[in-house]
Image (cartoon, rainbow, N blue to C red):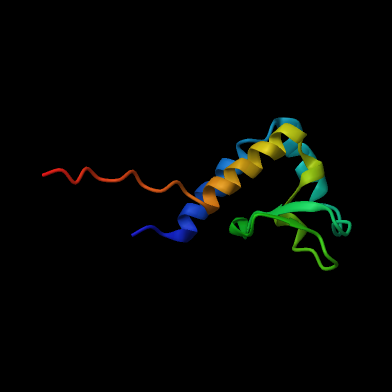
Length: 99
């Protein structure tokens, strides 16, 4: 049985490992902000399965937010691909039913 909390933690680590040192520093600086501007894209690292979200009024706790503006465009594209794969895992290969 797969523990969904464990797989989400592993996925969060995978996402954070995509960041360069400069991006990590930028994210750390962003954590000190009070909130995100309305419409700003972000990833809630505590609720990754929700995917990329847009800030609407009350944003989540900034200590768990990965704002799009804190990472390079290419890194954000990689993150989006990883999220898509996480939310829609590939179907298992069909088993050979030949007898």
